[in-house]
Image (cartoon, rainbow, N blue to C red; front, side, top):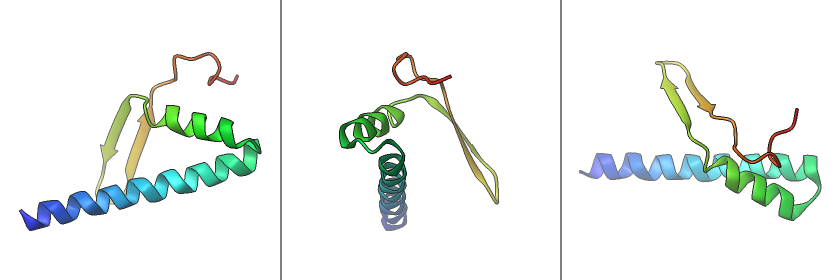
Length: 72
């Protein structure tokens, strides 16, 4: 039980750090606080797949439905 709870907390910390890192990079790129927050929020609501291998983890996100978020 304690090991599972510890693992859950580690995953939460990794998710928080990943979100912070991504938000920082998007903020530097977009230079608009409202835009990068909206984009980050919508990215974390996308469906996708997670492929776990012994040495790598690959996350594949489905394309967003909103035309505003799709840039070609």
